[in-house]
Length: 303
Image (tube, rainbow, N blue to C red):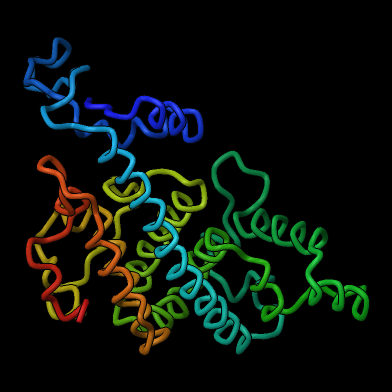
């Protein structure tokens, strides 16, 4: 790796850490094809040398680019999370103020069936975590409720304010199929199970951002279900594109689709595109590594 300013490189390594930065220079390492001794199949072996032209400023630029990207992504996820809280509260509230505590209005696998070897149902475990958050909460709304209604549990429209994205997506998966489908339909999906997969995907992305991990070209662990061709026209350009559907681009496209429902006037898509144009230029990596199709900027989704 070309390091023209040794002092700056040492300072960056001391501030950021060798292994955090190494995630950004990993794709720049040379590789060779070998035969795996265990399977007898071809495999790629990553070497310790870098490809020609690799320099430290490019690596640092990718790190800063990814840091700013995480901030933009968290902005979208915050809006989506708040909207989802409200949608769940309004829908469940039709079943009763404490519907989130009532096993009879939730999915049986969540509220009435124990996992093998478990003492409590998933619903009971979820409620325990919620109640603990409420007891420990220092938020004004929680303190007010505890002072005024000391013998009561908070109703659904208060309880949702205590849920982070993970707990929210977990609860969505525990709602009845009919209620899941009702919320999913708002985003153009006919099946709640597909929307559940979307939420799992976005929750993983949120966790990556919250823990300051590399985001931009990381494969999606929880991969979203892709709608049928024509169901959501803005996503049709990824139909059959397995690489695009399993990398960051898929999550960004889903966020953009959801924001068009939650906040149609949002400039988030434009801000994202403008930031992506600042990716450090280099001959080895491009946005294609993160699943971006060749002509993605011309798609109606980003207009």
